Structures are given as C-alpha cells and as structure tokens.
Image (cartoon, rainbow, N blue to C red; front, side):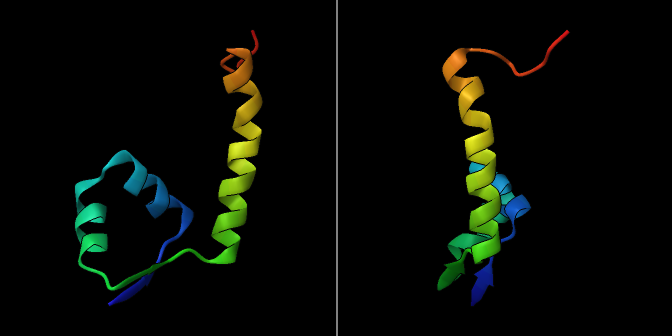
Length: 60
C-alpha cells in the first residue's frame, strides 16, 4: 500500500500516535507531497527564532 501524508498525519507520526504509526509501518511507500513539505518547512522556520531565543513566542 502507498500513502501520502498530510501535515496533520506527519505531526501524529512525530507524536507517536499508535494508529498512525501502525498504518505507516504496514505501507510499502510513504509519500510527502510538495505542499506538505512547504508547510512543514514554513512551520520549522517560523518556530526556529523562538527556540533559539528561549522565548515562548507569547507576549503579555
């Protein structure tokens, strides 16, 4: 079986959601569409300044 992950299922995989992990372990191929890669990259880039500055990104 081949599956294409959306961003939400990628997050589930990273969190170790049992159903998602089990499904993906049974697949021959797991695909990440270009749009998903772009969303993940944008999310990582957006989060990087907060991780390096130690700020939670929430202002009061």
